[in-house]
Length: 95
Image 1 (cartoon, helix red, strand yellow):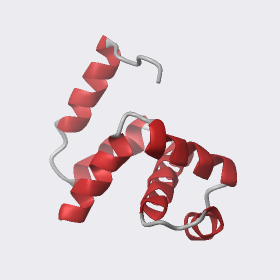
Image 2 (spheres, rainbow, N blue to C red; image 1 turned 180 degrees about the vertical axis):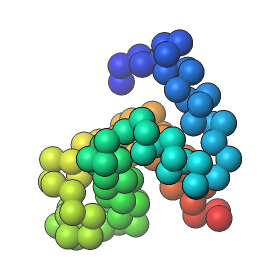
Image 3 (cartoon, helix red, strand yellow; image 1 turned 60 degrees about the vertical axis):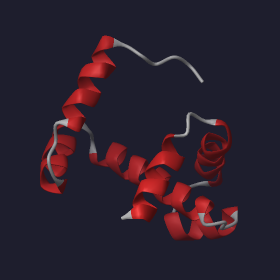
């Protein structure tokens, strides 16, 4: 994985971490992202959830609406990425 660390990204992530609830997240992300960008991010997380549950690509595609290329990329991240999806999915499971 590429090293993405930068002061600019640090500031972005601190801004995200300062948000207190879902309403504040909606307000911030509606300002900073396009509807398409938000939909794409949500779709990737939906695909990751489905893959994590053991669904096959065709089922993931049907459930999430993601393309096979997107599902493949998400799967590579689940298998060989930084562990971000796994971290979020485990925390969701604990809730």
